Image 1 (cartoon, rainbow, N blue to C red):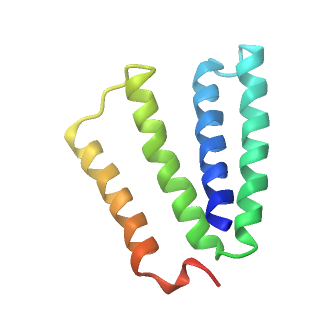
Image 2: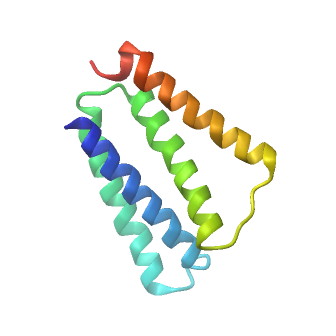
Length: 109
């Protein structure tokens, strides 16, 4: 169940960050409201995951997958291009998350 909570937290963080871009530096009301709401929900579900998982692991997965998702959304929705070093770096983030998930005994208490 804790991975479901973490997944919901990642999705909400991704939506909140997308709304942050759409808010145009908090000059648009509804995207600005969405930023606050989605980040609050994200932190709530991240806190649920923290009941079972160590903070370092939760934060690594939450932030890492959030970065990768936001980069993809930036490319698809906002037309933001990434160069080869950026794509390689994102690949390393995914690799790191996979190493934690597949090989680490620290993923849960």
